Image 1 (tube, helix red, strand yellow):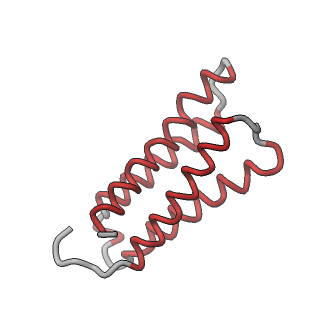
Image 2 (cartoon, helix red, strand yellow):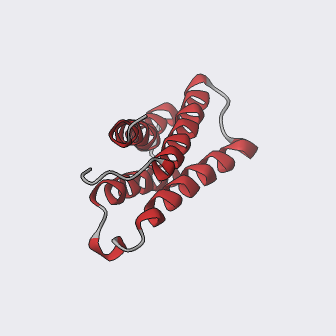
Image 3 (cartoon, rainbow, N blue to C red):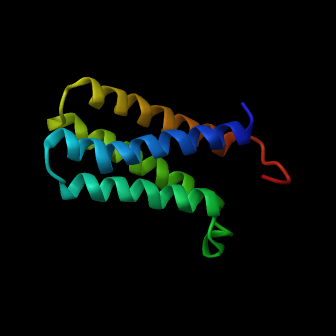
Length: 115
């Protein structure tokens, strides 16, 4: 899979997870829950960092990728003890696993001159 395809997968899965945490869970529970809102905002910040590659991280190319993978993994692990067990939750967890796999593959794919 090309790096550009992986970047698209990362964008889509990251946005889906962010929107689920920001919007869908608030609607599902009937009120905004601060932890879910912060989690969704965290995904948006990491997506922005992944896409823009801020200049202060230029010499640490993989840092954002690894931070993003860790963030998604922690979100997944935090769900295990007491997260809801409905279709939305399971689909979101599958989405997060795909996000982690795409980030890992992106790290391992050969770099191209222009991205």
